[in-house]
Amino acid sequence: MKITRACIYPKDVQCITGRSERYGRRLLKEIREHFDKQPHQFITSEEFAEYSGINIEIINNYLKQVS
Image 1 (tube, one colour):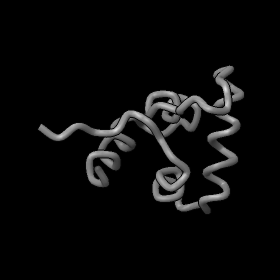
Image 2: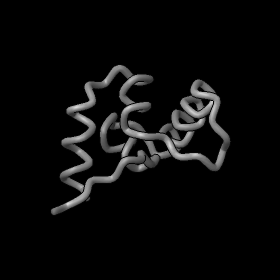
Image 3: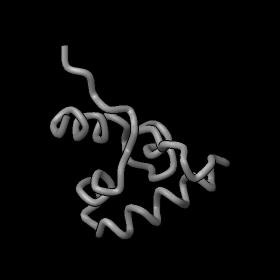
Image 4: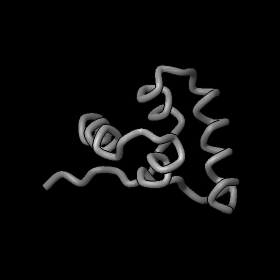
């Protein structure tokens, strides 16, 4: 059984949105602030979907392809 990742990285944001990796880092920082997380904590795919408005199925399909 193949396990998919639960967390989102800047490179994932780049591939999903078509924006730069720097934009991905900035967006993840904004999401951490939105959810009151510490800088060392990860962003989950559910949190990214909720904040960005992208359907969770699209994100999970992407994570399955790259994992």
